[in-house]
Image (cartoon, rainbow, N blue to C red; front, side, top):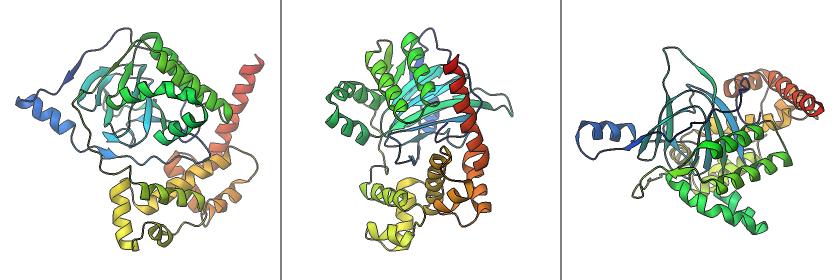
Length: 334
C-alpha cells in the first residue's frame, strides 16, 4: 500500500441499492443554526504526494486525524468501505452506508461521520485517491482523450455521488489501485475515471449557489516551496525555502502555517516519510541507508518519525510490501 497506514484487506465494497435521503440547511430556525455550525470553518488539508507518483492513494481507519471537515485543492475519489452515518459535502447533508463512493472537487469541504459505539474503531474505513488539476491538464496535452473527463470534473465541484453498479465497479477499481505500482496504477486510474465518465447512476450534491471560499491551497509560491522540499529532502532548510518566496524566516513560518495548516518542520517530516516509503518498496537500499538518504540523523529518529506517520516501523512497512507482492504472485499463478 502506498502513502497510507497499513490495514487489513477488506472484501469488495458493498454498495447501496437505492438513493439515500439528503437535506440542505434550512435558512431559518434552530436546525439552520446547527447546520451552519457543523459546516463552518473547514480545515485546510495539505496533501503531500510523492513526486515519483502521479496521484496519492491511501487508506485509513476511523476515527482518524485525517477524517475531519476539511478541504484541499486536489480532486478526491473517496470510498467508504464499512459503516453507516452522515456525510457532509459543501452545504449537502446526507446518509451514507458501505460502498458510498464520491468524487469531490477542489476546495469543496467534505466529511463522513460514522455511527460508532463508545471506543469503537473501524479498520480501513476510508479509501482515498487524490490528484491535482495540473495532472489532468498535462495529461490532456499529451492525450486529448482526457478531455472527456472535463464535464465530470466540473460537476465534481459540487460533489458527485455514484450508485448501484456504477459505484460498485468504480469502488473495485479504486481498491485494486492500492495493490499495484508503476504503470499498472496508471492503467487502473484511467479505467476508473473512464468508468466514472460513463456512469449514469450519479447525482451532484451541493447546491448550485454554494461557493466555498478557500483561503490557502492554491498559493503558487507555496507550491514552489513544496517542490524545493521534495527535491532536497535530505537537506531541507527553512532559510532556503523562505528565500524562494522572498520572505524572512519568521514571516515565512507564519505564512507557511496559514497556507498549509501545518508548520514547516511537520511538513518536512511528512515529505521525508513519503520518500522513505517509496525507497522501502524497492530492495535497492537498506533501511539504514534510507534513513540517511531521507535526511534523518540517526535510525532512532527515523523509526520514531516513521511510526508516528505510518503506525509501524520502516522494517515492518517493507515486510508488508513484500507480503502483498507475494500475495499478488500467488493469485496470478492460481
